[in-house]
Image 1 (cartoon, rainbow, N blue to C red):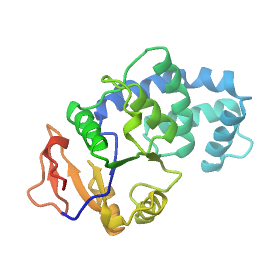
Image 2: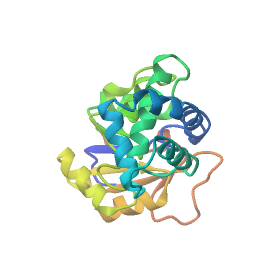
Image 3: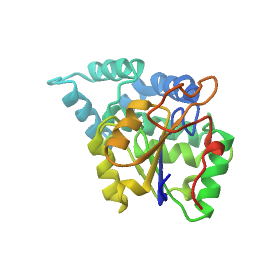
Image 4: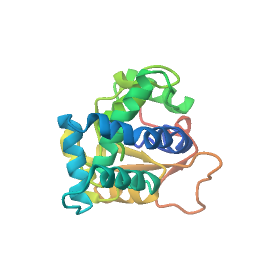
Length: 230
């Protein structure tokens, strides 16, 4: 492995369990979305993302209820919509603030992220969830506030996670050569895109998943198994 100057990590299935997102965050947003839209429809930021959702769906003069129905359908299908993710993040903020839940993070991920930061590694996040939602998650984990370990966050406003150009843009944004960046994810197609952009990659295959017999990417079961240059 070449020297690593920066580590870029996915969240869902990598630092945090998929079940936390699917079984806690998504249902919470789905249940509260109608009331949130109705009570915040005149808020400029909410209005902006509602208009973006309508534009994305090619809905002209959509009613408030049509937009609500659209967003709920997108939640159910786990659509990677920047507008939806932004609105979900606003709803989750209320949940975190009120103590409705704390974000799951794997102990090995929390331990290694803190250790890498202490050693001077630059750490970054790239997730389909909005930057605001990413910051909320890491600020309210079961082991405390992890936001101080990260230098920056990226979401789908940078580009889709399976597109090569997204990783090239991230490398440029953080001022690192792609070859000096290690990307961690549980999704092979994301790793393929990052590698095509020149980044180093490692597949995180958490239990009950196992590393494939043949893999184009180095594969480990958790963060503790990662061997980085010192």
